[in-house]
Length: 135
Image (cartoon, rainbow, N blue to C red):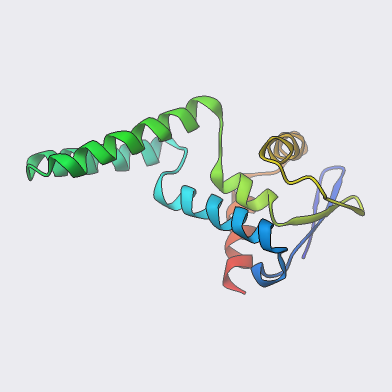
């Protein structure tokens, strides 16, 4: 799959089955973190609602677990961590024809920042990651 975002020509793996094993594990980690916790105000609201529901049902241990999850979401919001973005970035195989070799979280975040400056939007991130997961 190829994408052009500003001055960047990206090549992405067409399927998660094509990912190198370690990158496959990282992709799955980021997808799981995004689906379970998230990094948006909407995710914060969902968890807050669950906490109230657990408290109303006197399910205190579940409420405590959700409070821990809430801390992670707040941290993600404040630090700008986006598991969804990191999952997308882990699918990129080449940038401007050059193979990506460093998939450290810091490198992925730097790439996402550069891509954002060139017009990468949330819709592209969500749709691309979703399309690749389906194959």
